Length: 234
Image (cartoon, rainbow, N blue to C red; front, top):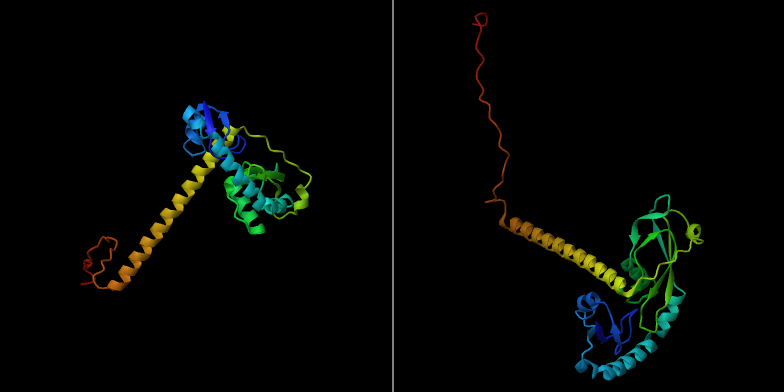
């Protein structure tokens, strides 16, 4: 199917471009996300306008974020982790962790969706691209080393990531979105339960001990009987 891009889409094209994409990618991701519309004759009449507006906005962002991109080019992050003998991590270094580290180091507000890397699962030196704009995609160095050992132990292990096709990249992004949404929902449930627990404790305290029913475990009572006296004891 052919779509008209309404926004810049990483690894696909710029706003105003017409692209041929897989039906699933277009209908399940691009169109629902407001990134594109079907390239109908009516929509094509707006292509030039969309392209001009996007170019102006992009130029402004490039100007504003140029200095940020320069800082990122020299950025190196270190992650001490637990790993097996083969260098395989017990877990992974996720885009969210990388985004948090960047923001902590540079006092910026990078979203994990701007981090172009899959979860890192191997010790070594990795590279991750940061999508600031379509034109500004600085690359940072991510050093993942064994916990308790200096980073120098892995500096000669350069890990090259495979280039992910745009459709697969979107699927991975959607997967990460789902995981993040699930985690946020779980946190909300915990918060609600904690609030309910606090409210219940407050109400119980204000009522005092009177009227509070306390359940006690059932106990089988054994009737005591006097022992029979023998002839000698009589």
